[in-house]
Image (cartoon, rainbow over all chains, first blue to last red; front, side, top):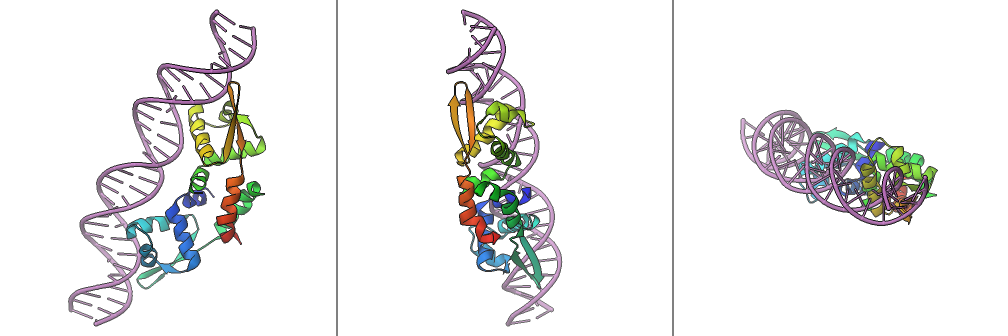
Amino acid sequence: MDAVFRALADPTRRSLLDDLFKEDGQTLSALEARLPMTRIGVMKHLRILETAGLVTTKRRGREKLHFLNAIPIRLVHDRWVSKYAE
Amino acid sequence: MDAVFRALADPTRRSLLDDLFKEDGQTLSALEARLPMTRIGVMKHLRILETAGLVTTKRRGREKLHFLNAIPIRLVHDRWVSKYAE
DNA sequence: TTGACACGTAACCATATGGTTACGTATTAT
DNA sequence: ATAATACGTAACCATATGGTTACGTGTCAA
């Protein structure tokens, strides 16, 4: 759960989750295009999201598709946020 | 809201919020006693929580009392977490 | 009134973080 | 076959972060 909190701490990463929420299964290049940073920067953020379990991936040829996984956010909500947000 | 996310990213700070959830209005010394770090370390974490609006304080003589303010967490929940946690 | 207590500030330090450029590899299209 | 495309790795860099020690200030109690 700590990895999830740390992953959510960065605005770029939250923006990536928003992008995937709007349109799931995007490639790295597509996600990169929306952000003011290099592909490598985006790659690093995506990896952090991936290790936190917030993003899953699937290779399709030379492309890598990224999918939002909201389950960790739900867990954070259920086991932590809800306690304070009542 | 970014300040709230960043404040929540650190386990020590989440632990401090838990401490205040259990018992509100604790002094710096009381909070320090529960943590494996110096008073100054705790002070810094509390300041970050304070600037994020998650903790409010009140001086009582030479003591400083700390109070949990869950409103920012509720805002994060309402405007962000709930979107993913459905 | 003087000593102990509770908190504050300043300076410093090691490591983590958020980015970059340069180069490499695998896949697709012409 | 070859060139463009899409992603990966390595090395590097500046700054942020999470901690420390040393010292200072205000308040309470004996």
